[in-house]
Image 1 (spheres, rainbow, N blue to C red):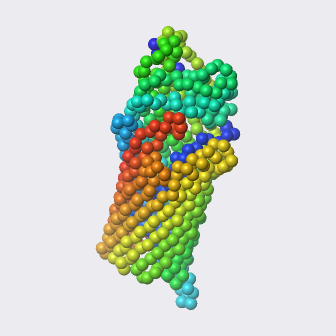
Image 2 (cartoon, one colour):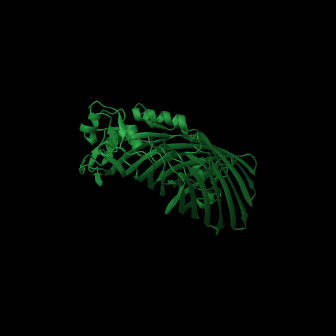
Image 3 (cartoon, rainbow, N blue to C red):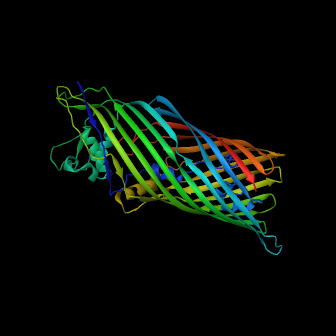
Length: 502
């Protein structure tokens, strides 16, 4: 006979502890998707030695001094993501679509007509870009031949005294103790003894295969507001700097379901036949970074660029809510009706995340007025990401994991443009290496792009299409039960930019 047990967590608690962040949280705020103007995207962002584009300023701040006239622009994008999932041979697929205003800005150029002054002009710019659109849906399902999510709860419970799980209110527990509390109060795990000082636990899920469904829905954005100043020396060497304000707003809803028809080896013991474990995360905050860049015209046709982007220092706030529902297989037992009423939402103390800096080397060759070809190569060391305060136990452990599991990677961007009177044809290629040493948790990214633009005189209209593909295999849970699906993500983006020269 099946009896149903609901363990619902309701209410609100303010926690003096810090939330249990993961390596994936550090990577989320360290990686930038290719965004910006349609011209920039059509050429895969290879603009470090080109300049003269509103989004080129985000690569090399010296690029604004290439402008000859004032310019303002706005860009819109439609993004479509398809995630193909393979979990122990079961294949599923999920699509999501979003439309955003992903870029806007303007640059104002001040010329010095004095022939005796070698500093010919100053450019001042302000730009806004959505550096990452978090809108994404992933659905995975299949049968795991041996593992249960009970191992997740066991990994947190072992070492925690039974007296804590029995008598300490949920809101007074640390995050790891709360996860153990879920497993214990939901009858997913049992103590090995009833001694209040017991610290060892066993699974209450019978051995065998388990059917799993994992759904993850994310929304939100990472955006950057940049204030730029640049100047040129003899119209041959250009210098620039950016001050950047970063804003992030991220929401994630995870729904995990497990069911089985495994036989209970001891008919007198109640065991779990299925469960639903849901988690909602909301993280928001702001950050600061700066950029320095130099661009040189070696000849009239050949250009070189070098740019440095500092670490970004975020102050982040996280709220997490969870609920668990379990179904008990209780042969010969009385119905189990237990109600828990600890708190639903944990509001944690603010914390700091330092994401890694980046160095970009660039080269470009300009074929007079007929076109150009450009190459950028950027290096970023993801192992330098750090959560702070670093003396907090969970952050110290996490920072060690980041140092051990992440690595530096390179990003190659190649772009070209060919002009036929007022019409411009563009194309690009982008490759970004994995931030993980194993190369599989998040794999390499490969992207192709193309587009065209038309110059109406004081008005320009640009259109771009880009395709990106990346594989990943991230566990459904961070520890204990770390099985996950193989995901192949395909990102299609169409962008439109309208520019006005003033």
